[in-house]
Length: 236
Image (cartoon, rainbow, N blue to C red):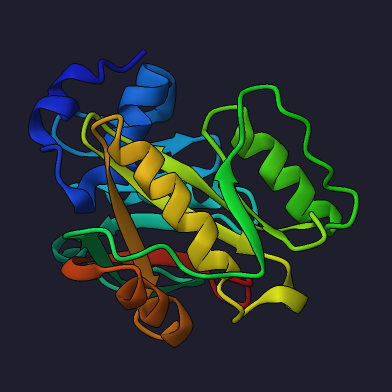
């Protein structure tokens, strides 16, 4: 069993380390698939990270074991040193933090953070999205935006969290996108977490214009960049 303490000592509590540090804080040693105390290969229930420069044989074996669709986060500097990995593509993600909350978005309906144990009907959602939200709610508060008719159509939750930061994850029913519901769901959870001493981190691929624009509307500004590895041909 690997000891997470040396890695935690090397990984500061900063926005671009929320995924690796969050995995170590949340899952401890069980998240570490390999480590020498300076570099590591982490996998916390599908949240995978590369820290430092693991030996290439261990790295390639680690990537081969990951389930389809898994993205792997690493620093920009480590990605440059790593170079190309056969069968895997790379994309840069811009890491943002919110300097100050903007006014809450105006929607036809309401947005709020669900109470613990409060029922939520997900029967109208695609099966994979309903499963994802059920899984997320087991470890995170859930911000939900409802239509005027009471239909839940946008959802925000924490994908990773450290002592100070948390990573914003958002899902919106396709037919209800670009109507302010995603902004509303994110806003209520951001303020909920801010009241508990945690600030939001927003990561968006450089190619994802919609996500970058939404981050700007919610008052986020870029502070760093990370790299995501993904299997070539997989959806992201």
